[in-house]
Length: 138
Image (cartoon, rainbow, N blue to C red; front, side, top):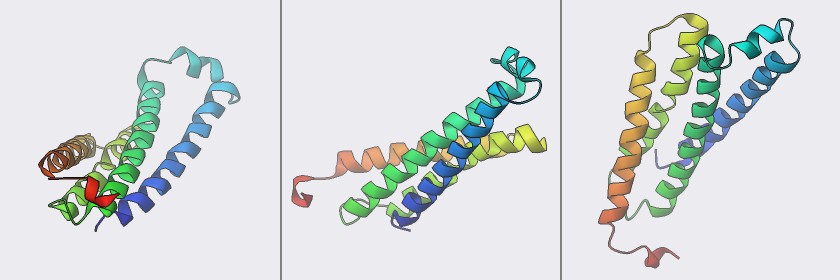
């Protein structure tokens, strides 16, 4: 794992959550009972579904960015494989929100994903601070 899978899975995840966004638009504008859905904008399932949609796309984008950086700077960064896996594990957060919402599952995956993506971003940031020079890779 050197970043390639982060990019591929990031794009696939982003595509999934974009399609999920279309479902949310349908529920808001066209579905029977749309008034009830609109009235629950900041509570319950409506709020949770929007939370999953936003975090799914954000974490997908972060995986694409992290994957690109890991591929580009893999010879200068340490622990590339660990950072890559942590970023991918971070996708458990938005998936976990959907699992809670639709399958009544525990929020454990949300917590694991949140901790993993945060760790990957911080670890990568520290790696760039420790890097001697970026100019060699222009």
